[in-house]
Image (cartoon, rainbow, N blue to C red; front, side, top):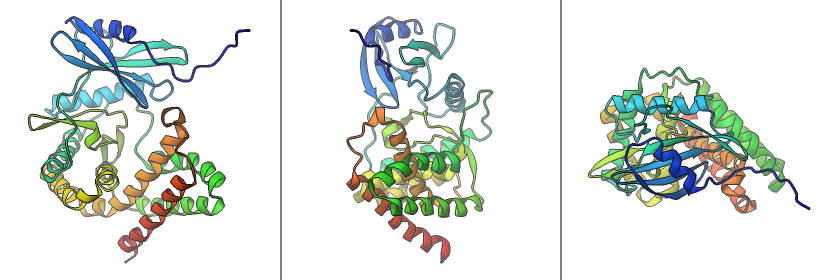
Length: 328
């Protein structure tokens, strides 16, 4: 007996990507290699003279309008001289290709390939990274698109929505007390941020060294998949969160050089600076909620009492720091 099954996420064959890429560039495509799987699937496309990256967006993650907003933003920045890795379309037609997959419609975009390597975290590079984000914020002022992104980087997106995925897991593993810690943290952050005079504008949404390459002394920034209009301080806080989370030994010196670089290009302002610790905690909540929402990407083996207890401990520790900053 043959059972009919539902497909949640299909891996598109490299031969199909070969044909899609070849239809968009004039040069001869030689090879396609599956590169990485995450919220989207990415393939490295090898041409006779150039390399490309073909991204297949996950079904249900971004619709066509949201992707076109992302591409509009990248092209706006590139037209202003910013070092963003952009879409490729040499042969005319649509930049965004609709792909009929077993799980439903998906969309594909061919991008240039970022040469170089992920920048190491050191004071020299974090100065460049900060300068790049400041430049991004400055050059994207006034950006608009006729396409709807579908969300903003606001407190609903960053706190309310991810918390809705976290609460049932906390209750199952740690009980109501842990849920109350989350609820109180979300309430406190929203209370403080909703009354603060914070700058909003176009944001990358995931700006750290994993989403850029350093080549001949210059940064090339890619993966604008989390971009939207929202809190600029959150964009800055993501870079700080990356240092705190992944580069603890280098964090203090490199955070200072990051800020120096940023403010060479753009003024953060005192109220936005004051909000940064709140956005560090916000990033923790957003990331955990996103991972729980997309378990077909990250799996479930990591979900246990130890991981969730660490999350709650981080919220409590963060809250102590918040109180010093906001209630002294």
